Image (cartoon, rainbow, N blue to C red; front, side, top):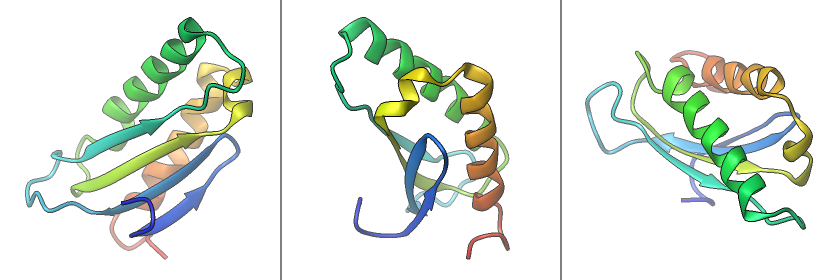
Length: 101
């Protein structure tokens, strides 16, 4: 999956996505890759919860089905929830039909 589909790079995330085999909208699958980057399990889980919630509320609703892998960079740990939301909003815009380049 990581080598297939298209790629989007944002300030804090590298994203790979492709059309999902599920034909129904809202049936997207989200994968998360969060590096250890000398951070504790608590910090990694907090980052994963933030990314999962943003993906659930921003990327999935009302959009075509995609398989999406969000790859966090080491600098993502320092990002606020609002900055992560801006990155996810940009990704959501790119995933809309007609915006995929």
